Length: 281
Length: 317
Image (cartoon, rainbow over all chains, first blue to last red; front, side, top):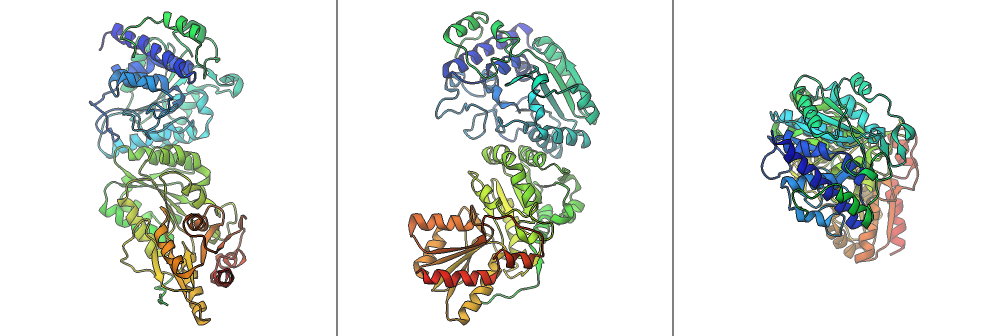
C-alpha cells in the first residue's frame, strides 16, 4: 500500500486543483468534487488495478464510470495526477476547444473517460454493460461506478439496480456519494431518499456503509472490503457518507457550493487551508 | 419501367431476426438485447443458439440503452431491439448522451414503426422517430423496404463502426428486392428509371411507389423510383442527378412530414436545386387503431396517394 501520507498529499493537491479550476472560469461544481476527493484518490491510486496508458476497451484492467458527471473537476484532477493526460491541461477546464468539457465526454478524446455523463441517472446502466462485457470476455477485473445521492431520484437507476441484482452482476461496485445535498437543498427536503441501505438490500445488493467518507483510511478499507465481496453472486454497493465542500471550512455544511465558484478572496482563503503538496499546474 | 416481383409476403422484422441468427453464427462479438419483446423481434433462434450473448433487460428501455453502450466497452457489438416507439422517444436522452455523443457502436433496432403496427393504436405507432434519430450528430438512420433488404441491412450495420438506428415494421409486405443484395449504407438504390417525375421512397412505401409508377406508366407518365433506404447519411447525389432529369419530386414515407425523408429531400433541393416537391407522409398527426391497410389508406400512405401526389407535382413543374 502506498503510504497514507503520500495519498493525503494527492488529496490536498487535488483540492487545490478543483478550487483553481472552477475559480478560473467562474463556473463548475466544487462542493461535490471536494466531497469525493478522498474516494477518487483512493480508487485510482490504491484500489483499482490499472494498465499503463488508456484504451477505450479497457480489457484486463478495472474500469471506473462517473455517473454524476458534474463533479468533473475532481475526476479531471485525479486522472491528470495519475498520468492520463498532462496536469497543465487542467488549465483548459471549461474553455473553448478544451478536452476538459464542463461535464466529462469521450467526444474530444480525453484519456480516462469512457462515456459522457452529466445528464443524470445513466452511469449505472453503462457500468453494468461494461461489467457484462468483462464476463463475456473472461476478464476477471472489476467495474466501479460513482453516483450522487440526489441522482438516485432518476428512475433509470432503479431499472439498473433491479437488473444488476437479478442478473448477478457481481463484478460491479457502485458507490453512492451520500452527501445529503442537491441543488435545491437537502435531499430529504427536495425528495426524500429514505433508507438507501435497505432499498439496495431489498433489491438484492450486498451493501456496506462507509460512515467516514472523507477519511482516506476508512475509504480505502471500505473499498477493499467491497472488493472482497465481489464474485459472490451479488452486485456490491458502497454508501459513502461524505461532506460536500470537505477540506474548505466555509464550503462545508451547506449546499451553497454545489455549482458555484469561489471569489478571489475566497480562493485565497480556501487554498490557505490546503497548502501545495505536489505542485500546482 | 423495371418490373419487380413479390417473392412472397413477409415481415421486415423477420428479416432482422434471420440476420441476427446469421450474425450469431458468424460474428462472435455480436450480442443482442431486448426489452421483453423477443417474440415480436424474431430473435428466439439467436437466443437458442447463443444464450450467453443475449440479455433480457425486461421492460426497462432506458437501462437497455445504457447497458448496450457499456457492452461496447470491451468490444461487443450490441443490437438493442424493441418497438420503435420505445427505442426512440422513450429513451431519447439515453441515446443522445450514452450512445450518440459518446460515439458507441450500438445498433438500435426498432420494429413496429409507423401506423402499420395497426390495432394497438397511436400509443405504439411512432411517426416521429426518423426525425428524432436523424437530428442526433453521428447517428446513421436506415429504413429498409422489405424482408430481404432488412436482412441485408442488419448484416451490413454489424460491419459498420458507429451508432445506427435501424427501423422496420410489423406487417407482412411484398418481398421484392434480391435475396443476395449487397447493402451499402448511405447509397440510394435506383429501382426504375424514368424521365417525368422522381419518386423517392423509404420503408414500406417503396413497394407502393413501384405500384404507383406502373399505373402512371399506363397514363403515359414516366416515373423514376429510387429507394432511399438510408435517410442519414443522405444520398444527395442520387437525388440531384435524378431531379436534374425529371424536374419534380414526390417523397413517400410512413412518417410525419416534419422531420422525415421528405424534409431531407427538401433541404437538399433548397440548397442545390430548388424543385417542386410533394410529400406523401402523415400530416403532423397521431395514428389510431385499424388494420394496416385501412390506416395506410386513411393517412394517405399508399400507392393511390403517391399517384395523386405525382399528378399534382407535375402541374407545378
